[in-house]
Image (tube, rainbow, N blue to C red):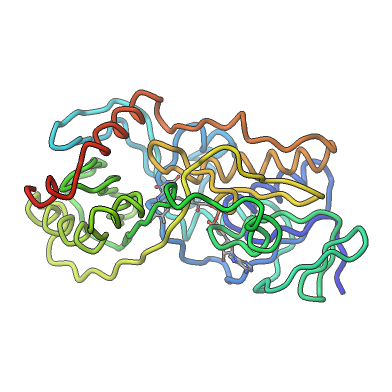
Length: 331
Ligand SMILES: Cc1cc2nc3c(=O)[nH]c(=O)nc-3n(C[C@H](O)[C@H](O)[C@H](O)COP(=O)(O)OP(=O)(O)OC[C@H]3O[C@@H](n4cnc5c(N)ncnc54)[C@H](O)[C@@H]3O)c2cc1C
């Protein structure tokens, strides 16, 4: 049996940021991840300045693909705006590996199956034990499943279904494009060109609304592929998209008890407007580490609920709810 102070289940941004912060406090931890890093994670890899600053990421020190956008090309139901704002993009396969290695924490490839409480310690698969356990295993985190799911079920209303693909492509348009609420999609589609010749394209939306409208993501993916071709953004590519789901932030659910902490997607913390989850994963990982180090309360109140600003979220919500399946057919 391996004993340590803190076991972190999952080495994505939430787990890696938690490990890094624990190290700053001089606390030992062990990261368990079912995947060997670098590993694939379906994600567009967009990061806000706040998310980039929270890990003191300097472009000059980052050895991989790092893209800066000075503006975003946004269309909301066909109404076009050019939003001037500094935003960034990384490739998750590179970024997550870099962040985890930078934490300096020991990492073990291990799929967590069972967790039990034995005295004042948590025992994982009869192989690892710790006083504190951090659930950073994403949407299907075993820590959430074992200790929180029954008391704090997540609302299906907050579930985002998303589909994306990232591939090398000799793009000619270096703008980031976002299309909101088109063809009845309760969410948005994106085209994100990245440094070193990659593009990421995808669609994501509220799973329950799609279902209630008799709609599905596959249809929106096909519409996106058509649009990319029509606009000349991506042509003659054989797509092989990957799908994944995650929860938008809805306050009220339990995220900590008895030396157990949920961070990132396992707590369901992506922003309510844009579904931005990397920043919240990083900040919650850091806040959980601080709470462990100080014995204080773990709270995510300080993390913004929105990526840009509340009005955008309100506009999107009201426009989105006005869409019915009949409107979808009309489109
Ligand atoms: C298609 C798509 C596009 C997105 N685009 C963006 C974007 O552009 N910007 C943004 O900010 N957010 C985006 N998000 C959300 C973002 O990807 C997540 O919020 C973020 O990855 C959460 O990080 P995390 O560390 O909590 O979880 P993850 O990154 O999912 O990491 C969880 C880790 O836990 C491991 N794990 C899981 N189960 C076990 C187990 N039983 N045992 C051991 N290890 C386990 C996994 O292998 C994984 O490495 C997107 C999501 C999707 C699906």
